[in-house]
Image (cartoon, rainbow, N blue to C red; front, side):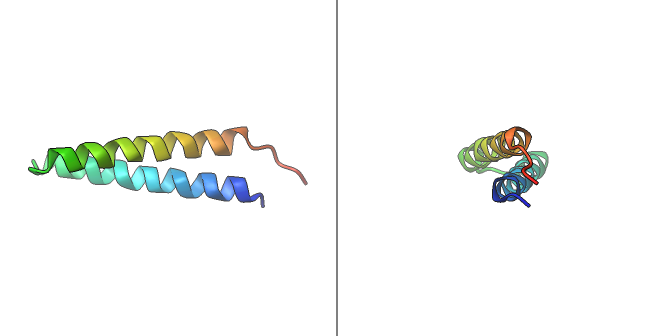
Length: 61
């Protein structure tokens, strides 16, 4: 298994966790808006970079 694909999968999972955390805190009407914005933006960056890394890495068997 390619190390880039594993790293991409880890980034994608971290991004999903960050987005779920942000969404749950927004629904619960948390007061830390700046923290939620930072976590949400970092989650989006991790998610899309992980998806791009998995998508663009070719399998070499």
